[in-house]
Length: 238
Image (spheres, helix red, strand yellow):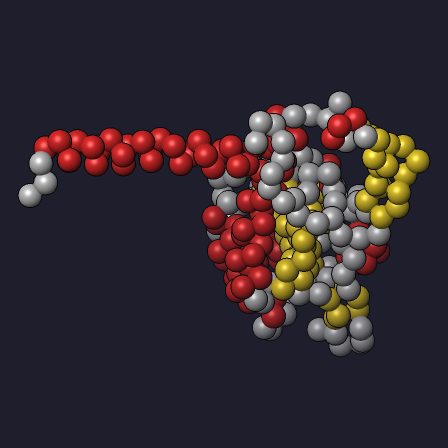
């Protein structure tokens, strides 16, 4: 049996590790105010501006103007008008679907349901699913559809509206396909991609909504983006 002295030393070492590890991890993330984690990429077209900002050691760096998701006017399952301003200062997880979709939509929304429930208490995260079939997916129809997931519109919004707004949001804003492809009631072409948009309206990730692996990556990258958004609050740009 170990002596009381050895037991005491062992306990001290364990306690020291418990106290040191969180501090070490915090140091790795902050490194005395310097960002040491790798931020997510920013998707879409971009241009180099004529303006500059000060980088490390006082070096002037050209500013980059990134693609931003344009505003829209839609309606949620509760009949409330929704614009991008509704989700101001939030990370928004977008997807497209229609309630009469027989297979793919159900799989995507099932995966999103599991993910959304994990962020149910996090006010920084909003899930938004936009129908590509607004003729049938009225607010009332979406209210009934959303009920199966048990989340309020404050966490998961199901949006409808006119096709001009919907298809423009998809193609010009989120840079994915969404359109009516034929005369049949279920003839739609739309992306199964889930798109993460940051609080500055920039696209930060694309994920296959039917892939468990991609959904796990989305979960991981949401946490990375949360860190970035919180750092913006702590260290606002000058």
